[in-house]
Length: 419
Image (cartoon, rainbow, N blue to C red; front, side, top):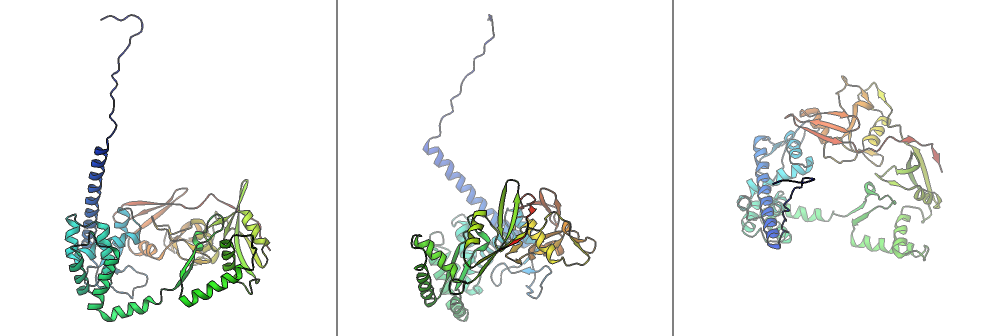
């Protein structure tokens, strides 16, 4: 065959058939089955991990050193606390979440053997079995066995309410004193939460609670009465919200104080409220300043890049505040405990290089919650701060995990103003 001019080639177009409904459903079902099998395997691996790292009898008197943990009900194996974080990070969980997974697995295998057998055989979903395990952990062994006998055969289809009924029935039968204690304790579930840690950029905060009926009626009357005195052009929900804010003042006209840090950025300013983990707009701050009876104090942010030092083991209060503002939360991978909740610090100032070999200085300190501080001090964990990246932790088994920085770019301190 001869070719004249430019050579040409012929490409054969292969049409790819669009998936049909039957093939998609078949593939989806196979995926779901594979996921269920993997969830069972991970539950088995969790019990194997506990077997490899057995604990002794739990000693609640240990305050700072590593302890053995009771992660399931009475009679179930305990675990060496130092082993929990290693497993948790390997399966992509926080330390607390990993401990719960290990505890649920142990509870099922050792105290709910009938249900465990159905889980391993694939007859009961892992998530449903874990709900049962979480409910029975507080039961004595004979009560847990009774729940296992009653629910194992129908756990795949019973409701959460039925699980709770059977658990409380077993508790009343096998541990009546504990049942009465729980009834009395239930009366103390009253609470009133103001979620300052999660304020919106617009300065709104979620509030919820459970009140005694008489208290709730009285509160409703107070809010209704106060809302009726406010600008009627505003929506009722807005007026009720404002009325709730006035409850903290004297006769609805007393003083209230908001302390903020002003952060200056090129071309933009933001305002961080000191006792929350949020920022508000300058316009919102202006509104606060214009409200009668409200005192707004604008504080300069501490220079987060300064190297502060002290000759003692304990950092100064300014140093603690600095690392809390700089690193925001516990430096362990996956842990989101805030370094500060309002003015209170909820983490320790951890020395990367132990004192006195390492200085008490900004560059050698990081916030760590008490659990992960103990891992670093007593359980063979170590970390390095990597500039611009985060903290690289190394486990006792030599595995490495990254905890990225959550801080924003360096900020310039603003001038101090008080109104």
